[in-house]
Amino acid sequence: MIYLDQTATTKPDIKVLQQFVDDSRRFFANPNSSHDLGKEALEAINGATDDVLGLLKANHHAITYVSGATEANNLAIKGTAAAKKHLGRHILTTPFEHPSVMACFSRLVDQGYDIDMVPLDANGHVDLKGLKDLLRRDTILVSIGMVQSETGIVQNITDIKTLLDDYPNITFHSDVTQATGKIAYDINMLDLASLSAHKFGGIRGIGALIRRKDIPLKGMIDGGHALDHLRSGTPATALILSLRYALKKAYERRDRQYEHVRRLKKSLIDRLSQCFDSFQPNFSDDAVPHIVNVSFIGYEASELLKALSDKGIYVSTQTACSSGASLSRVIMTLTGSKERARSSLRISLSHDTTMEDIESLCVTFKEMNLR
Ligand code: PMP
Image 1 (cartoon, rainbow, N blue to C red):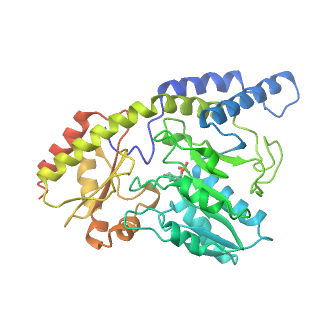
Image 2 (image 1 turned 90 degrees about the vertical axis):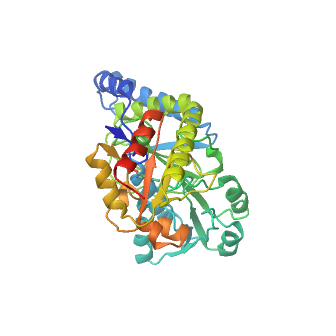
Image 3 (image 1 turned 180 degrees about the horizontal axis):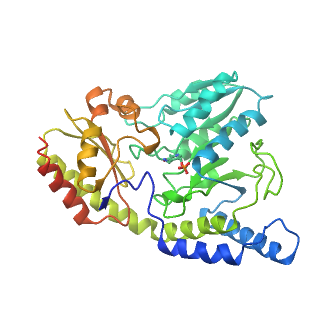
C-alpha cells in the first residue's frame, strides 16, 4: 500500500492513539463535575489548552474545541456573521476556499449577507490591491485560507493583516487546516483560525477554533456542560488531550518533514517531466511541497485514480470533500484550462512517504502506458 493522500487525512500516530486510550480511562470523569475527579479532568484540559496556545505562540487567544475544521469554519463564519450583523453584512473570501467554508457562505447569501470574492493573481495569491478595493465600511469578515488544500498555494497572511489593520470592524479568519504542522505561521496575525487534528497525525473527531479573546462570536450549539459559551456538550477530554499531543509531535518534526517532502517532490517532478509528455505541474514555486498537483493532459483524473487504486496506490482528485465533480474548480480557475482541470491529480506527501514510494508511483505510471 502506498498512501499518497496525506492531505485528505493522515494515519493516526500510534503513540497518540495509545495516549488517547490511557487518557480516556484516567480522565473519564465529566470535567464539569464539581468533585475532585471532575476537577482533575478539567485541569488536564486546561493544561492541554495552555500547551496548544504555547506551541502556536498565541498571545491573545483562547480555544474552542470542536469536532474538526468543518465545524470550526462554520463557527467562525456563521458565528461572526451573527455576532456582527449590526455592524454590516459584507464579507470577503476567495474562490479557492475549502467546501466547508464555501458552504457557509452559500447559507449566508440566503440570509441576506453580501459576499464578494477577492481577486487572485496568476499564481493564485490574493491580489492585495483587489482586496483593498473591495473593503467597505460595512465589511465585517474576511476569510482567507492559509494553504490551499488542492494546490498547496500559500497566502501571505501578514500582508493581508497589515491591510486590514485600518478596518477595526473586520474579523480576519483563516482556515489553517492545511498549514498546521506543515509550515510555520504567526497565529497572532489572525482573529480566528480553524484547524483539525487528523491532518497532522491526530485522531479524527477533534479540531479547534483558535480565537482572539476579544472577538465577538455567537455560538451555534446550545446546551449546558460546556468548556466555554460557544460550544455546549460534555467536553471530550481525551480527544482534546490527543490534539495537544499530536500537535506537539507535528511541531517537533515540522522542519525535518518539510525538507524531506521537498526532496521527494523535486524527485517526483523531475521524473514525471522527463518521462511523460502529457505531464503538466499545477503549482507555483512557493506552494508547500506536501501537496503536489499535477495534470496528465488527455487523461481523465478519475480513471487515473482508479487505475492507481487498483494497484494499491492512493492519491486523490481535488479535495476529498469535493470528490465527485468531474473537473477541479480550483485548477480551472488557476489555469483556465478545462483539460488540465479534468486531468488533475493531487499527490500528497508526509514524513511517512519514502523515496521508494515515489519511485513506485512513477514506475506504475509507466506500466499504465501514460504518454
Ligand atoms: N479545511 C481544509 C483546508 C481541509 O483540507 C479540510 C479537510 N479536507 C477541512 C477544512 C475539513 O476538515 P475536517 O475533516 O476536520 O472537518
